Length: 257
Figure 1 (cartoon, helix red, strand yellow):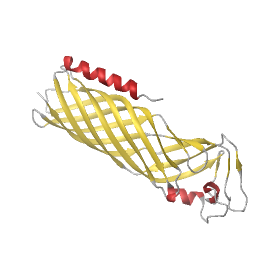
Figure 2: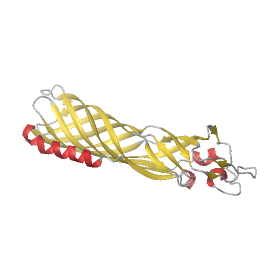
Figure 3: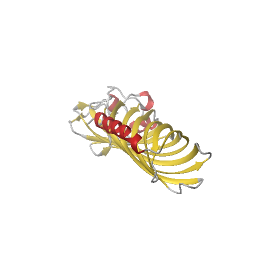
Figure 4: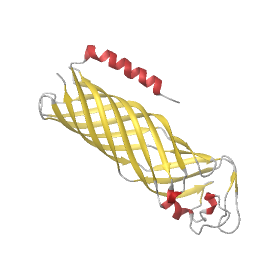
């Protein structure tokens, strides 16, 4: 399901209504350290015949057979920009655009039909009629690829201690994320697909009032989407990929007025 038209309409309505309520506008930008959580990938196959299992035999796999593996990601980075408005009661709202990216570290624990296939020759999943001389586990351990997200959020915040130099705040937002995933362990293209999904985030941060117009802030955010459903390029099937993020950001705001 595509949330883009609905979300765009809500954002437009909010921006049109905001001038009547806002006491002050601001723009903000930040950079982030990204901790992309591991993904317990899971999916089902179409009907296909494996390559050489390593002993000269093959296996007919029925459509709907469960398979999956675990993917670990390296630490990544992100960039965020926001346009927002302050109101007289401590509330603040903003429309945020964000981009994040993290590389794949490794894949482990490949299963098919509920059992491990780590020890099989990699020819079995590569469709090769002759053994490749390396196990499935060895091939997928060489993790290559990445996961990237381009997102837009409508955020609502509450600022504490508004008369002080240091102002803690909390916030939350909903939006959409266009998520793209590439899995090509050992140069073998397995996944190169993406999906646009509903996204949400919660935040906590601390603002330092450097001047009357300039603020510096540090922030933690947890973001997540529903699982990303992708098509498998190696053999028939789909794979659901989990997408959860922890971000530590530092940035600056400029207050108009």
